[in-house]
Image (cartoon, rainbow, N blue to C red; front, side, top):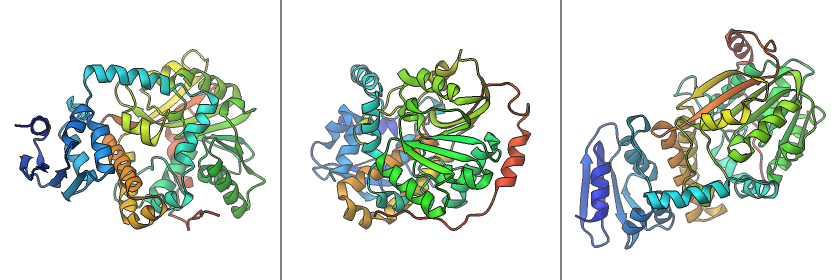
Length: 418
């Protein structure tokens, strides 16, 4: 039995996987399962060795190049099959590198996540300065590029993203006239929502020039540019004070060596009775390393932190963590929507870039999705306050405020290039 066959024979128990080797030989693994889609894939010469040497990156690059192809199923089905057989809570991990390669990767990872100012801007541009048209093709109309909040897994992506904004706004208890800072404001949807719902004045900051242009365009289109401003500025250079701070999906780019700087700056920017809400992807377990595919192709310099690493950043700064919520599968549902929309937009994405980029993007979305459903990824919402009396002493107020903010999906605003 070939080494790659042994690899899959050990990894697959539930579900059916068939591999067609370059010489035409076909080998099957596992057993049919009505809840798992069967996969039949074909390897070109050399692919098996690349996967054995570096499973995740080897599989990704072979798929991107078309040397790993599917006869039945797709890349999402394959990654689901591999991870559902090795779920995190059962002690499994599918694509684990060897000890030597892990150590080398850990060193490179530690160097890569030291996000100094110039590098931070370059890393952000690598991902977020892609064509606005690409993001319009798979995100919701408000272009929320972060975990949605699914009160019902069957609801629409648009409604779930609207509910996410209400969920966060309710925790912040914003009052009219307050000053709010949105760190990592994306294309401006959260900042504009907070102003319209609460009457607060909002400053959104980003390191993406493309996001800045789009956010300002939207504020002007909405007629709120006098109350919602957007600036291209590093959080370390912002001057306060602010009554509220919100940061959604930005903390993953800060880098562990700078967590202390981040939290100290946020605390200093808040008024004495100020409140902050941090929404970030996190690890359910301990510290780890960013996988080679993500570092190389998707988020250079990015890192998903463990809760213990986040805690080391804020402990001892004389403010309170007033609430923590763990969103387990919400991002998995979000990514499923994004994957389906990306597949539906295949021709448009290939026209924007090429087939290799399209395959890279679907591998990224499918891999992330399985990380939340079967791996050790979650989302944390962490709330902080400088004063112990800044918020009610029970969580009941969150539900009351959320119900007041709730609405069905409005007509969206679609940003376009130009």
